[in-house]
Image 1: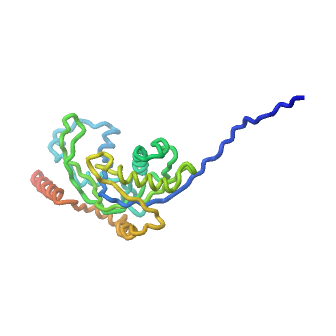
Image 2 (image 1 turned 45 degrees about the vertical axis):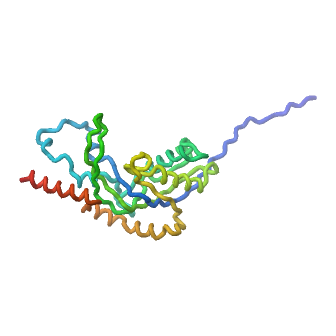
Image 3 (image 1 turned 90 degrees about the vertical axis):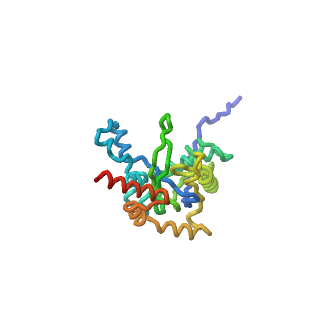
Length: 253
């Protein structure tokens, strides 16, 4: 008698495991903020109508207002300034294109950032720069942004194991800090080299501990005061602000 061997076709699915690591980012080059201002949000929501004759006579820019609207901010926590966590994950995704052993798709699916905003330490200064508009003629304009010469951040990252390890996350974030950066005029774009950073663990920072301690003293109270009473980042900005004050007085008269 022949006995048929019964084979099981049951599919066994194993639950994915998650690892977690907290890392600190130390700015190697200054950070430019460039959040979309409240006016731009309102124009997108309601539509930007044509300017009236009175509005056309007004001074085109309000540097102080543009400075305050350029930052991402939050009402609670150790800092007043923050940065979208999605921007950091985006930097890691782009860095994966230049990192052997991992793909951009892997980063998108296997790495999770539980916080929507990461805290940014450092004193913001008001800085003006000449930029080119996105129109066909590339019209020059003046852009006012918050500029942090020294900055640091702390980020919480979760990742799928054993596909990824804590060491691979550190290496990938370090690559992102070296060749991509965050913020406006960052290294990734080619022309600027701003927003680059080095990476350190939160437990043992070694020689970086002193730098971290100094920058993190510039937290919420320092940042709120700097936003309320802006200081110019350089001599060129100071000259432009002086001209702006004189022009306001002239038009008021």
